[in-house]
Image 1 (cartoon, rainbow, N blue to C red):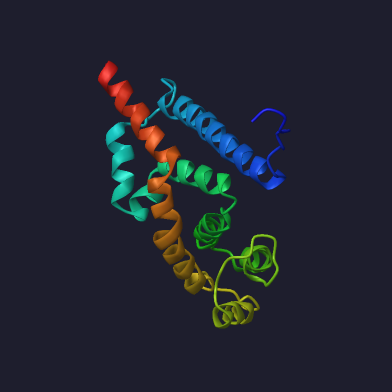
Image 2: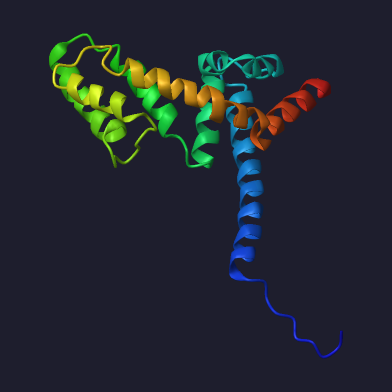
Length: 184
């Protein structure tokens, strides 16, 4: 209609559109970097379409693949929800500690970083588990984080992993590898 002044969109709508555009661009940039890293001829093992398709079979299969783990971590970081995988990986490393004098400071650091209420990368576990770990950290064992690790793995399996499989990142990687296969 002539004479009407067009009002700019409300700020929150502009931000939503900007976020959407940014996420698509971020996804494409991440995919480009992942593809370059994973299909590089200098890499000892190339990422294949078959390997990537197998990630959809289970979270265990995804985490068992160095490329799968790297892609999943990148996905979680892009969603600002990487505390669970970081905790799970940190616990896996912690279990490898054999010297008790090294175990105690590492257990304390894991507790302060992931388990303690209001910690920088606080994981989502129940109060009872949190308190049990707090008690165990005073005399740490390789298993003192096992219960929390099981909870976090379950959360990833039920929430983050299905989101990853539905993500543009995973779909784009599959499509890219399928295209590369077709061109060979």
